[in-house]
Amino acid sequence: MKHELIEKARGIRERAYVPYSNFPVGAALLTKSGKIYTGCNIENAAYPVSLCAERVAIFKAISDGETEFVEMAVAADTDRPVPPCGSCRQVMSEFFDADMTVHLTNLDSNTMSVTVDELLPFSFQKTDMEK
Ligand SMILES: O=c1ccn([C@H]2C[C@H](O)[C@@H](CO)O2)c(=O)[nH]1
Ligand SMILES: [Zn+2]
Image (cartoon, rainbow, N blue to C red; front, side, top):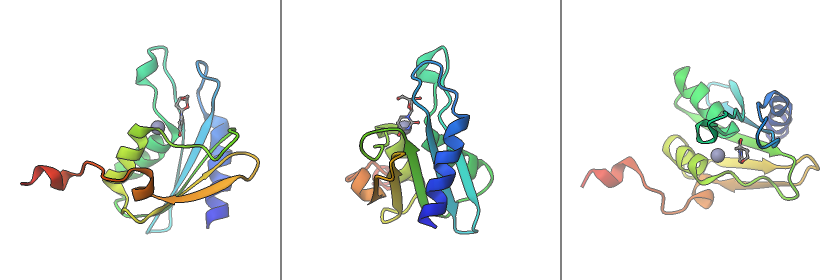
């Protein structure tokens, strides 16, 4: 499944709307129900309105009623496996189990697999507001 997700992440990257950064990114997310949700980054003339590939894939899945996730892949044309930004790490920690695997890759098959907790240790959670 890792390779299928990586292929899907590399494929959807072609749909990225990136006239400002010229840096297309793709993501693919596998649900426990067996569906794969893909996402690409979508930018805007008002730069901060742009959304990363990872969050597009996650929000597509959440808006479709999916709540349980198995594995994710992210792909970009980087020297090292592409590191997700802090905002995406926070969103991953909201919806994914701490031990879920995220495969980070570039276009040269340089891949690194990390857990959500490794990406964002000591993350702020909704349980932190329950004291
Ligand atoms: O993991 C990443 C890193 C960056 N970007 C996007 C945000 C912006 O559109 C462009 C440059 O930061 O790449 C992603 O989609 N995912
Ligand atoms: Zn991001």
